[in-house]
Length: 231
Image (cartoon, rainbow, N blue to C red; front, side, top):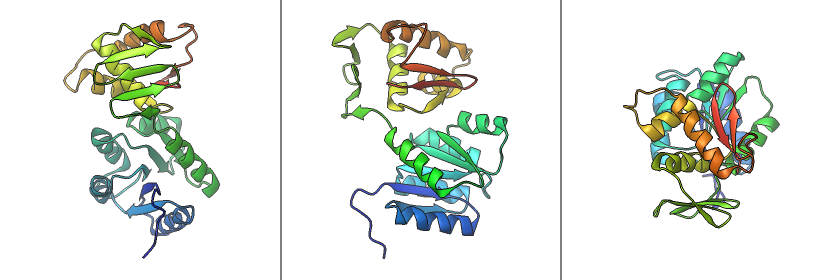
């Protein structure tokens, strides 16, 4: 039986190509990760629920359930970082993958070195320091119990939606969150308004937390997709 370091990150590797799956798993284990594998979408969701991985490597083309469906299903139950692998190279495919909840995207063929570098980057940016009821990023902090926000020690006046939106962005520091995803998570599945509502609330937040709202450094726009919190 393989022995893993006590604090090894668990990676769920989902790919229906046996040779690629086994080779990647072998190399990732050699790099110190704990790796569990799935060959189809249904098995991937089952393992995600039981193993609670720290990161998911997800192929786009899968039997049973395709990668986009798996990605959306994972996003409904988890904030785990997702790196999508695919043979599709078009920009539209990349946008669709990111809109579905993926945090990063690699096309086949790829180098093992680049893959491992991207994994390390994703694991580093899972989120800012969180202490149960608090999220802290530099001089900006949120208390999730009292629902109070502070910037450089001064309390901010935020509406409930502004607070929830800022908390969602800070929880996923470094990750691109689409407008539709933010709309669903903050306003709910039954909200039928325009996703420009997100843009308006981001603008209001920038006016309160950015040194220069016209040139934001904390909440950055990712053109055509959504927003990324940089801290």
